[in-house]
Image 1 (cartoon, rainbow, N blue to C red):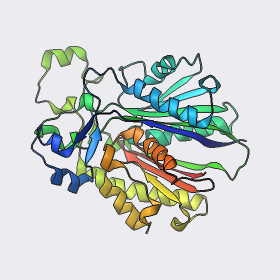
Image 2: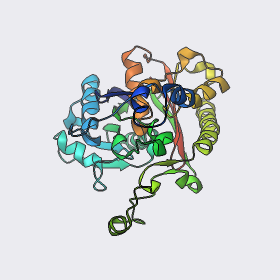
Image 3: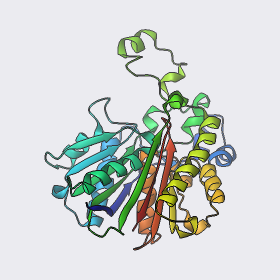
Length: 335
């Protein structure tokens, strides 16, 4: 059985920077209110009519990852695309990225696990490579949130949190069992599915019903989040799945060279950091610059951390995520 290893990382964010002060001109909020609750100072949002989208951002992140890996697009055996904001209701964005990149007929698999999407995708890639079915996998997480947000006071508790962007990783075979992805751990708890969700449009609220009964005050067409419940569950599940990854690999928190949490809320990351007594230099956060980019947040953070020299050969890197579904997961990597 083969091992799998990340050999290239890339990311892309739109040029348009939207600060908390910018949002205060659209809704009843201010920098202090947003910073206190989330730690976010600014985010990147796609400009209207720019032509950018979920797949096209993914292409830019993927091209960077392939270049850094020294791997050709023609060497990719499988594309995995994680997003909650596909360009189309169907088909998924995986095949759109494949076409934009001129990749031929390799399979494209779409992952719909929201904030945990990248870790779920990493686990799928890991298993395909370990079994010998594929040699090189391109994993992309990309999100275009701003096109579906309510940028009024009514929607501020959600819309101030999210940003647009993409991240990508190239994962390949590794014969040294001590290198690469050591383990992944995945969970879900569907009884909380509607506590962080978009209820419509959906097959329960299909197009004729939307047209006939459209109500601009109906929040079901915009993301809904039970913030307190999400926070309480996040800090518990983060801790559990981190502990599981450490125990599985015979590690302690002191062995972690870098912990990269899903960038959901800086307060959650700080709570987990304190619980595991991690130093500031052991944790990488960039939510203050990009907001929550859901499936893209971990690969964007990994790509930046690697470029800044904070991920080095032989480092132990821990990833963890929690989000809509509820879904959560972790991965421990020996770089």
